[in-house]
Image 1 (cartoon, rainbow, N blue to C red):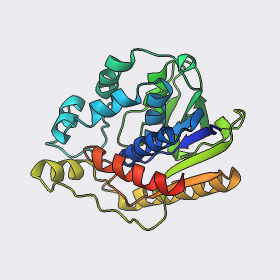
Image 2: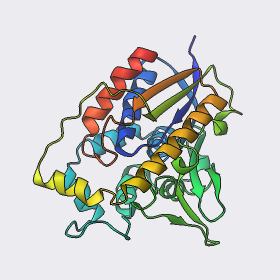
Image 3: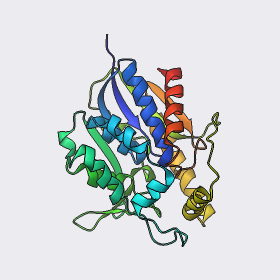
Amino acid sequence: MQKTVNLILSGGGARGYVHIGVIEVLLEKGYKINSISGSSMGALIGAMLACGKLEEYKNWITNQSLLDIITTLKIDMKDKLSNSTISLQKIFEEMKKFTGELNIEELKIPFTAVATNLSKNKEIWFQKGSLYNALQASTAIPGYFTPFIMENGDILIDGGVLNTTPVAPTLNTPADLTIVVDINANIKNEYKINYDNTFLEKMWFNFLSNKDDLKNLSITLMMDYISNLRINEYKPDILIPFSRNLANTFAFHKHKELIEIGKIEAKKYL
């Protein structure tokens, strides 16, 4: 008998590519996805699954080199990123070429993107309205990517600030299993990502490195603590963890390696 799943995909930047590998194994094994909830990169990957365009997204992204990504984003790396932020609009425009403009309520699978309302200090769920507005809000890593400004002036940023593993939005959807894929787990990393060590790659990581290491570490610890609380509060049937040290948060050009790691780990748990 086919088992049904409520799937929760956490945030974690480029490490989120492992979600694609996990999803492919789920589908290969015959699981049916009843609902999806995601934060940040988990929201983006989950959205592609929910609209039936995950394969198109994978084909597009795995053909993007680091130079392609930088060119698409129109980034000038002569100056180190400081008070400015990067707009992801060009990335979303490329994605719209194979998804079209979509509202969340039109998706093939019930979907929730989680963001943080910085103006009101609360978590916000996107379950209707513009899909790409929701993704812009949910993926807006503070200090790096441009936040989403609502019509009333509220500032929305990355959902992972308050809830990187959003189980609650799926609770009203009947399913045999709740599966959480946590890509920020405080566990030993068993994999090695082979970085290119090119001048361009060094420039990219240096451009995005955070000068305020103490602040960055404090935010990471806070998010880790909140994530553990959420997982313990809503204990999933299956937790598939990936180390927060698996890959650099901004190693978006390491898509193929991360997808394969997602497949390998998923097969251990499913």
